[in-house]
Length: 226
Image (cartoon, rainbow, N blue to C red; front, side, top):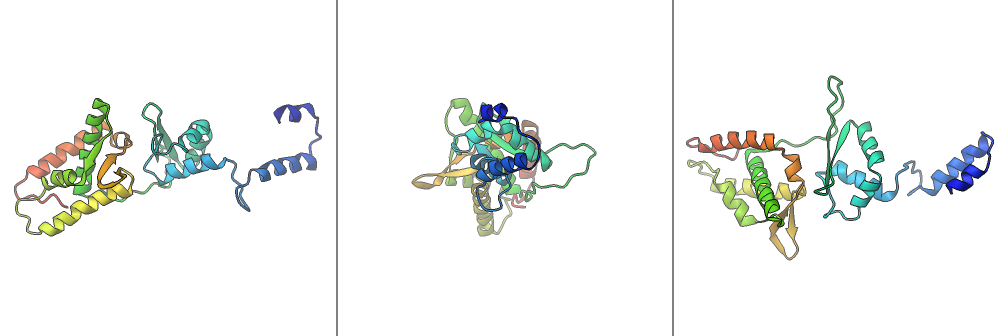
């Protein structure tokens, strides 16, 4: 295709434009489509934007497209003031707001604030993930295990046990919805922890949150459900 184009001298003008239009039209995925990325690359871009991550193991069809079109996808994200974070060793990619310095930019990636229980759960899941990686094993957890871990943060003077249990279930379901927990086939109460959690929560942030929450949990009468 390239050799044919170079071998023919074409006068600039309408014919050249028509040739470009024909080439673009052939790549259209639907009527009115003006995109230039192939379908797999577009789907990879959508996964990055919808989050929380694109993982080689969980998205085997999208990962090769990301690798092949990394530069263009990175450019598309930069147009939105976003940065592509790519760890090829772990097979994980995700986006975050670009550090634009003094330049004020719109915030595209909006995240709902984490409750105390949400944060405790994510910190525990990250710990499970790190320990599993050291053993070279998948990071697997049970719903009962997660609930028992979160109950450690229930205030001694809490009288609304049902409400606290509801908050525990809500935190677990939120982690599932955000693809940080994936239920195993045939067992809806056993999950695999997403490897992206290790990158989303960096070591410094983990250390700071752990210190804060440990102190909060140790306070007499503290109810860790806020």
